[in-house]
Image (spheres, helix red, strand yellow):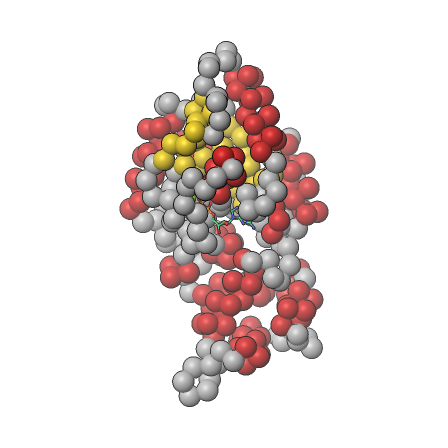
Length: 277
Ligand SMILES: Nc1nc2c(ncn2[C@@H]2O[C@H](COP(=O)(O)OP(=O)(O)OP(=O)(O)O)[C@@H](O)[C@H]2O)c(=O)[nH]1
Ligand SMILES: [Mg+2]
């Protein structure tokens, strides 16, 4: 599957980031802990390469904790300081502030006040991150990608102001696997993809890595060989029928993807740290 979701607001967002970087001292690059590699926009990486940066892995509560530890170890060896942060619950803001001050101090003399920007793919949790840092709902968040549109500066504390930016993907078609991973985790809106295809990819992945997750969640005796058969069983169990009584595969696929996103199938990390070691 190729990613073909690159609407006009992303072109604008890229321009906005490029412009605003001039007045920023620090970049928070947010990546999804479930796909620490696939969720890093290479265009943003290039754009922000000359600035002090901190990589923040979001949604660690949905990722496999063992693999998150492995990813963190691996990324700590890289050029950018890394931390994980649960913006939905329990993220430790002190860790973020300590890391920011360390990076800023290392970068040179200390002005009175700093400006930072959050960048990352759509729906990765940029606005939630900012809300968590302020302890208030100062920016709009949502389950769908593409919630933030304009630019919004937010005062975090005495010394830090933070710019929220719209999520951006990259224009060029990427590896099919990356496209599926972005779709499954919610960086691409469901309307822009074939849900059955995405659910099919997800089922194959889970079957390969942890088939019991499907058995448990959907009370199956075994995972059928064919993806269509699995959708059929789940659809029947949930009563997801079309007029005429046939199973609605599209709706069933949507339920499966939603269950994954809500962590109801378990905690999964789709990018393997082994490939990068
Ligand atoms: N479980 C979990 N959910 C999170 C976390 N961070 C953000 N979310 C959820 O992810 C969804 C997207 O969050 P946003 O903060 O709107 O993401 P964004 O990056 O600002 O998205 P755009 O503005 O659309 O680019 C929301 O439903 C959040 O509640 C996290 O650490 N864990
Ligand atoms: Mg946002």
